[in-house]
Image (cartoon, rainbow, N blue to C red; front, side, top):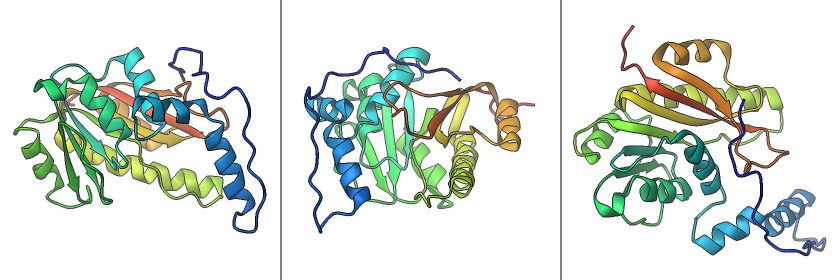
Length: 234
């Protein structure tokens, strides 16, 4: 597993903010709020206009592996609130008319310049055709997924659930990726299950797990990066 990133974090606030306990907040809510208020990536995201701190994860991965290039066509699965779309749009130069970014999510998203957004379930049978049409009739160079299932608190169950989501995204990615394309998806500590990993290695030239510096140290998340899609060739 590699860990792309600059090795240094944004400075953020110099003084730690503490949230007072109150009847209106549970302990977990208090911990979450304190973490947000003291997270330098949250402050940097607001400063730079990104919709989520996760934008920095994609930035770090792309800085190292160059999966988003000018002119590329990109599909972002489960895209809300849109942080990854913002990064992808800039990197493929969608606003200059060179690349295209298409986002799909069951939840509503505010518009993003030069990003086509569908409020739709990518499980829908017509989803691949709809997205390819939005890409100008061409297949995608890159399929992104920062999706995660709701945590149950049971590590094994959470791992199984997110692997199922990654697998579904993988099947979907195969239906719209062009040869040489990339699939990037969030997984959890423990990585990608053996059977799925075997299939990925059959369909992609390189499969690796990465953890960006902007991914919290105490977070179980990793990212599975599969590059060099073989296009269904044996």
